[in-house]
Structures are given as C-alpha cells and as structure tokens.
Length: 223
Image 1 (cartoon, rainbow, N blue to C red):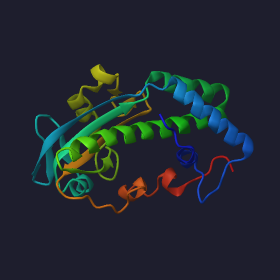
Image 2 (cartoon, rainbow, N blue to C red):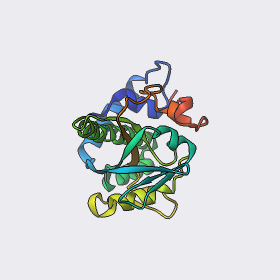
Image 3 (cartoon, one colour):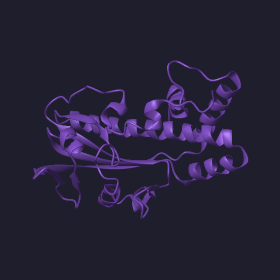
C-alpha cells in the first residue's frame, strides 16, 4: 500500500507548500511505516443497474435508494452505479487510540497516516472498478460518499447491508451511521457511457458543499 506523504500533510492541515519541522517529518515517516505494518487491506464492491425515478436513484437488485440533489447530479448520466466499501481493520483503530493516550502528537500523526492509507485503498478499488467498466466500453465518475453534500449519512447502513460488509470484511455501521472500524470508507461511483465532467478532479473538496470542513480550510495543527 502506497501512503502518500503529501496526503498525510493534507490531513494534518499543512497547506500552501508549508512543510513540517524535521523532527515532525521523521515522526510522519515512522508512522507511515507503522500503519503499513498493521493495516489490513479489505474491500468489497458490486455494480448495480440504476433507475432514475422522481428525483431519486434506485439501485436494482438491492434495497438502496439514493436521494439528494448532489448525488442526482453526480449520477445524472450513469446507467449503473458501483457501491464500494473498504477498511483498514480494527488494529489500526486500537493503535491510534493507544497513542492518543500515551503520546498525543504521535496519535494525531498516526491518525492522519491511516486516513491517507484508507484513501489510497479507495483509489486501488476505484481502479479495479474503472478497469471493469472499461472492459465494457464504459467510464466511471469520481467516488461520492454518504455525508458529502446533501447525501444522507444514514445511507451507509443501506449500502453496508447491500454489500454484506460485516460478513465479508468485518465492517459494521453503528446506530449513529458511523463506520466501525473507524478507518473505513463507503462510496458510490457512477458507471456510464459518456466521459464524466472532470471539473474538480484531484480536489474532492470541490465536489462537497461542506465549506466549513477543517480539511478544506487547511488548518495547521503543528505550526
């Protein structure tokens, strides 16, 4: 698993080409190695035909109905949608929790490294979906997760059930619709015959209306 150093800096709030002090940089590298050693790369995905009806998107052969203006726009050309779920496993959560108690700085950095790692795993799975779509002469959109824009977070439970995530990769959804293990992601990718709109590619913040998100603002915790 490739954990991008600059992606870790993003999660730590570094921005505008700011770089960490030398000792912080060494600790980041140490934490990247540690996450690589304990993370379990587990994932599941499936592709469903879509039905666009009354402003909602029904995924056939499942009980998932997507609703909200943003996801309708994101999938407006998609005749299919891929549902995906990834997790790094429980050991990552346990290690972060341990360090937050005994060494908070290292705990924060380890947390950021895990966030970058789960994004890297998402990229790998997205690549598999892209290849599968390409084999049928189709294209894919960028991924979109419950909680982005006006797509309700509660849909995580429906998607997890459709993918049988608990049995297949040990990923559960809590009563508050959060993922457990915490370093996990559920996402939706459109599959379509036309090239997707590439505006915002490479910057997921442009796809999300959460303008007050700390990662959008790039707050720096260490300088």
